[in-house]
Image 1: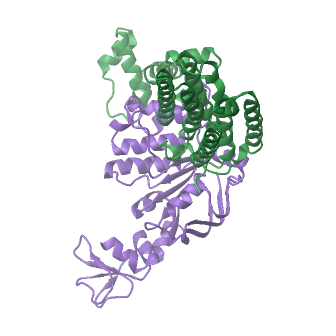
Image 2 (image 1 turned 135 degrees about the vertical axis):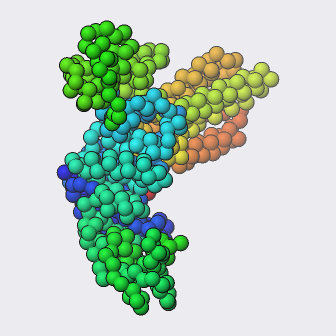
Image 3 (image 1 turned 180 degrees about the vertical axis):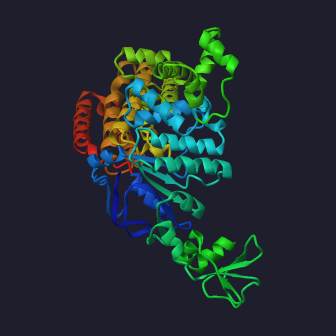
Length: 286
Length: 277
């Protein structure tokens, strides 16, 4: 399994700090990257994918340093990347697009390239859509095609930037199944807003906020952050605490115990919100 | 693939007896590839089946070789290289823009020549023609021209190999078009070739400068430097402009500068920092 090591990584856009001395080690399996908008998730993934040059710190992908040009190419041979906006050429067929990316990934022999295109189409369950143009594919199919291009060349590290955004529940389930299979033999780094994705897929979770890593651990440990601080009450809590009404008609709140409330088992989302504070809770409720 | 239906007994028997027409045989075999259950029901050689399916599948779905590809392959360009150069929509636009610009310029120069402005027509053609390949090169790579650049830039082919291959292909198209247009249309005649070395200087210079700046900025800077310099000479020595800026001594100078730029490009080839900053 590929190991990714990040030490003191920083990135600035003008006066704004997108990454603030990030330290991270990622081993095999699926690692989820959680955080609100502007937390620095995409910037971190783009640095790891070698699309973006960091301002400081170091990255190692299987021991290769992307800041050194020759090693950058070696690192790229081990990376498959699905960006948030992949920009797949709309007038290409699924087969043509994968064939083109396969050439970019140095799969030059025609027979081997075609076998590889068939393999990834099969892996993402798009074999019967090979002749369909990208613009005619549904959103979910397009995302799966994006995943297929990332899998060309069988990379050891797969980086997925919010792949489940905008997918309907059925497509999201299908995508989850694919990612889960990928994690059996590869290192998968998955950025997401969805705590359900993390709970369903990830062995490990990293939470980012304000360009910093504020949590690293298992999903269970993340839920444990809110242990003894999640409450259910029959009446809306008084004061400024954030709360929402659940499906049972009870009011769920995080933090101080409202009067008459009973403690309940925290979820990953509770732990996540607890870490991020009241601003994130307000964002969720809004 | 997940399969939710299976081959019925009658169809299976017909397949095993060899009573099916080729189209239905192909359909049954395509199904069996995706359906472990049906493979278990019928005696088939899975390796043979997979091989046949792959051939049929590729013949239907794989991109067909165009006459241009067949020609280039015969001339020695590998198939995957042709694919790399022709597949990108951004590059096609870059080629088209360069070709239209060169042809437009050649026609404009010819019209000026016919209108009696012979020297001015030659000067216009010689001043502007070297810029066009540079513009084409600047449009050959980068996020501004390629919607899939985010993916492209993280593949092993990204960086020097891709930039140089794309730049070479665009320069070749622009140069051949301009050379043919310059020779066929009435105007400066053989002097039409006088812009080729300045174009080489600007293209190699742009690529060398792109090891420090982004490709479009490098192209803009050198294009501006060229236009400023050459128009300066034009205003200072209007009567002898063509011979002083494009005559043999000047051509030797361009050759020397192009050699220096090519050396810089070679030495700094690993510095093409195509990553976003």
